[in-house]
Image (cartoon, rainbow, N blue to C red; front, top):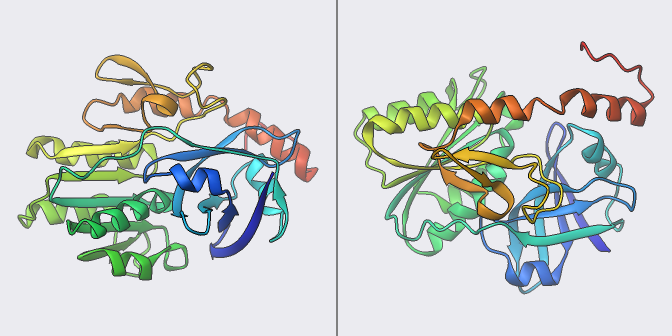
Length: 280
């Protein structure tokens, strides 16, 4: 069991958890993830490692309360324990070969690109970031990004902060202005990552995306996280979670992501006592 050392509210329904996990922290690298179970009856849920402190032996994850398991996690307090906390899993992201990188994060995707910004900064690389949110109150890690990026561009859907529009608008503008990037690393909703890959493809800019698919065991045995990349079946938990964005079959991934939506809704209703309504 792993103790929750600190909980910080970052935005509406988004919390940062610092977990005591010395063995995971010792071996963790940016881009990897953990799988946890809140209690002995809980489901196994993957979360990207947002930060790590190898000396203190802690792992930081960012959690958005959207489903049954994240609602159970949100009910815990500092000092409580998580039943299972397994990791690090997946392949670490390797951006070391690139001298100028653009990080693009939409919503909770900022949890994935933040450790990349820290790592690239430590190597003396040029790193810019585009961070998007629906509104100002949902912008996360602004100060941390400014401390680790050469330039930070914030976008909000409603224009309440930064540039009005989507992250793709900012990416399109930066490319049209002649900004030179060796690599674009995009993380967020599937349609957002697909759109970013579509923007960079004509310019032949290497584009990496993070496929946070449904996972069960984290070893590739269940097949739940499979994704088609370059016409071949890959498994996000062992082959990824990062893949070449120009080769991912996003339409297939989007269709698969909706498969369990009704089942998740039923579990939430059981937890809250609300009436199940599959049409809403």
